Amino acid sequence: MHTNKNCIQRMSRYRNALNRFKGLGFSKIFSNYLADAVGSTSSQVRKDFSLFGIYGSKRGGYSIDCLIEQLNEILGKNELQKVVLAGFGNMGAALVRYKGFSKEGISILAAFDIDPAKYNKRINNIEVLPLDRLQPFVQEHQIKIGILGVPEIAAQHVLDLMVAAGIRGVLNFAPIQLKCPAGCVVNSVTLEHELENVIYFVNANEKTEGVAA
Amino acid sequence: MHTNKNCIQRMSRYRNALNRFKGLGFSKIFSNYLADAVGSTSSQVRKDFSLFGIYGSKRGGYSIDCLIEQLNEILGKNELQKVVLAGFGNMGAALVRYKGFSKEGISILAAFDIDPAKYNKRINNIEVLPLDRLQPFVQEHQIKIGILGVPEIAAQHVLDLMVAAGIRGVLNFAPIQLKCPAGCVVNSVTLEHELENVIYFVNANEKTEGVAA
DNA sequence: CTTTTAATGTGAAAAACATCACAAATCTAT
DNA sequence: ATAGATTTGTGATGTTTTTCACATTAAAAG
Ligand SMILES: NC(=O)c1ccc[n+]([C@@H]2O[C@H](COP(=O)([O-])OP(=O)(O)OC[C@H]3O[C@@H](n4cnc5c(N)ncnc54)[C@H](O)[C@@H]3O)[C@@H](O)[C@H]2O)c1
Ligand SMILES: NC(=O)c1ccc[n+]([C@@H]2O[C@H](COP(=O)([O-])OP(=O)(O)OC[C@H]3O[C@@H](n4cnc5c(N)ncnc54)[C@H](O)[C@@H]3O)[C@@H](O)[C@H]2O)c1
Image 1 (cartoon, each protein chain N blue to C red):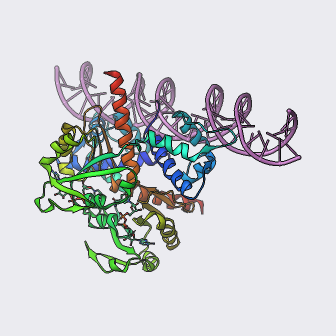
Image 2: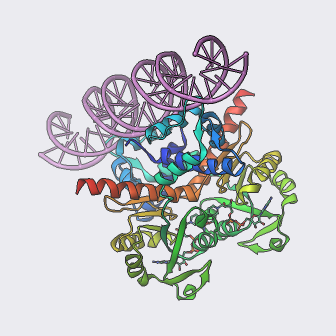
Image 3: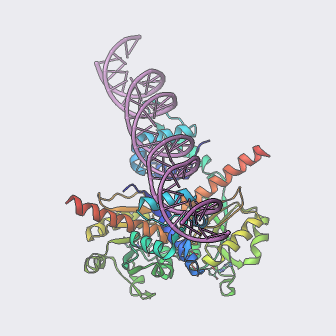
């Protein structure tokens, strides 16, 4: 299969948009409307679906229920996705309080921290435990996915702990490049850099507009 | 200039890594070491720099100070970047409390919300104001950059307000495709989708490993 | 000073990715 | 039932991005 990160992101966006269409009472959709809803093109949509063996009916478009079901399968939405969080600071607490994950079938089962002041807080029914409980917890619950909300300085260490415990994929918020063994995935979301990106393109626009005007 | 989002993200990562190298006492660096530090290749590094007219010395590598200075210029680090935040909920509060932005020359000047219970809180010297104060505030302070931490349902409306006030680039956390006029930039960070991405690739790895083993 | 060594800078080549365009399919109207 | 309209699915084509490879240059060694 010939897929990349962007392609899978588009799958998530399709699913997201389809759920909204469904909520509005639609039952069928054409590639061009779906494309509009996610900011893409109809041929991109059809190509993506074709890649995953998702087929509609010519002239009839795609059945929304059918599409959602297939996207659910691809994105692992048919089983509950169990996740652990390390670092119950500002970001970690925001994630734990967020209702959107459980709506998407993602469940943060526990949070882990080294600061005893954070232990035994319980928010959204998620408990904060000492870091040394992470390894047994992950093994007991057979958890494959982790979130890193610890400071940059601790990120590699905690990632190593997670991997040793059996975690195979991590969403990382620390602004640092992490190393992990082959077969493991790290997806780093670096908000500083995302903002810098916006700033760059705003400045770039300003310059070219100046020239154009 | 022929640059894209990924390219600019790499610029941010180079700068980030270079600051660490500098902190360790280095003053020169070769493209291959920088590549290792950010998870890229030496030719990618050189190509990127060449695109921006950044040159080193053959056989001598790049001067770190010099590189950082040029990246600062490209990424707008030589002036303070003023930002407003809309939505002082879980995510908004985490962003306001985060120390890392000001370290990077990014300053959230104020937060705006519609919930009166949030008004006049002051964290990190950032005040929470009623949403209808956003427009005059943005105009008065000549702010170009916004962050959207409001619920999905409000995101497009608040974005429109921001754009009307003069905001030209937005970092959006709501899991929805936003429309904005040409000349404006929206960068959406959708944490649900980022996690789904990790989940997808973990599952994909598991399957191919099963086949290989 | 000359030679050797090693890193840059960049066209050229390759790979990855997106768009086009149209045959095939199937729905709708008559 | 047939014709006409419209959308899919996909090979062909185009574009963008990355990698290769090597001439060029500058540091270091002799
Ligand atoms: N908060 C934000 O808005 C924001 C924005 C961008 C990036 N980040 C990044 O996200 C990460 C977390 O940021 P934050 O603002 O929540 O920081 P924070 O300091 O509020 O929280 C960090 C938490 O991690 C815990 N911790 C420290 N070392 C640990 C370890 N070894 N094991 C387990 N827990 C440990 C601390 O006790 C603390 O509770 C950082 O890497 C930061 O750079 C945060
Ligand atoms: N918290 C997370 O970890 C997280 C994760 C992924 C995505 N998100 C997204 O980030 C956004 C914010 O999430 P959150 O968890 O902080 O939600 P939240 O409900 O905690 O906060 C939303 C805030 O926006 C305010 N608000 C509502 N309508 C507004 C309007 N029209 N103008 C100004 N303010 C308004 C509310 O009063 C509230 O303070 C949402 O779109 C959510 O989907 C959050």
